[in-house]
Length: 588
Image 1 (cartoon, rainbow, N blue to C red):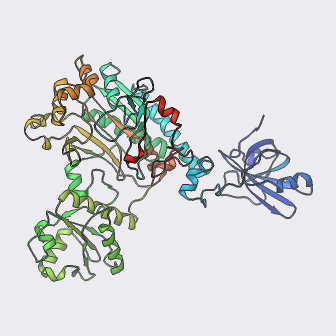
Image 2: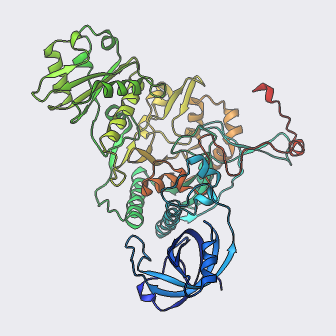
Image 3: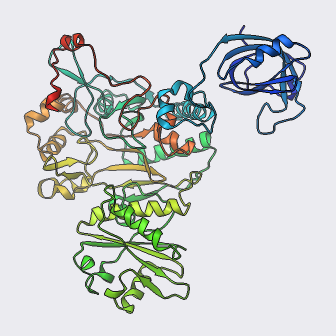
């Protein structure tokens, strides 16, 4: 056999044993008449020793080993003279007496170590080498463990894992679909699922009662650190439930995963439930990071009309955050903050600041426009103490300005070290608006999806003020990241038809797009609801990563490209002919 042991399991108790190891050469070191080789596999690293005095030929062969050569050795486990307490195998070494080179290797384009010298693009191009690094491998092992525990938890509650199709019909709502042409049905297309939403609802109609699936989903949308064109959901649905039933079930799942996978006890206290409108007013975000304070303070009553600063006097919203202990910020640092909020990504017109001095007096960048009394009221309203820094944004659109202030708050939290990867703050955001206005479509769009049920108390508003309707929807947020979301679903065909009407669908269009679901509701659909967790996001949080890419085996880059496979790419014209597709790239 190729090996008797792995490179991560031998310990001092194994001294004297004859073993066979296989793996990759991490590095070689020649010291006098000895050659030391670090041999690595998935399980760890073991030091090999080749002695020139006892076997000069073998030692000479060892000296010729290159990085990432695949080798097999036999030898005796020996106690290490100079022990390495930073390695699990650091108390032993293998006195090698045979060496078999299984495969040679080119010199890799970057070092296969935790602190590698390879940049993101280079590592993604050679991802199969990057996966050999301990840091990446641990993320994949964490992901594996999490999926096992998810299945264990849901199975214990009677959930049934059911696979749904990966080739479905395209839907007009939500993000853009990836479409797949059908050769056997010329001119017609499948879509890759953005989620199994309608299919899992049909499973509820089918009496499955409790369903889950760890499923790959696809969205053709712009990318960022927590998005990929293909991602994995822990997709769940339950029948005969209300919102509390679902929240309690999946809050329990979050606590279970933190305990079993991360070793963190979240306690028995229920997570905070924060209405959407309150989250927006206090934090400017529907996924607020609650690991630190700096909550928004609205300053319209204090600053609008109380001085000659026209920017504030014309504003629809004025809000500020109090940054503790930062009154010593220099002009250069304040200019950096101003440039940050004025960047195209944030879009604010400018930044106003005020410093509370050590003696309690206040000095601001708009002193000439306001009396001392007004500035003191500002300090009181902000709850600012000596040595605190007050940062203020204003604008003509309240919601837009709050979102800008949110980005500033997150930046200051990062600068002050308050966004600790080992601290976890979880909550539910509830009572979302049912609809939001789309400038592009010039109509109301479903904020979540068109199958979300409105709050029963708001159903009457569908005819008179649909923009005021709240959805029976909920998102779980962890450390400022939306890790899951769901809703109670519509199960009444008439109410579903009404929602389609509000969204601008004619009955014929609704029937064309969603007739299969509407018709299914006519055959005794149960009350039901569900939730989908983002597996990639959960793993990245547990691993302390800023991006989901390093917990995915083969991710895409920020342009949606797989630089390793060089995909997407052009296809043979013959394939396009078979699909009856003609390209005219000049139209682009």
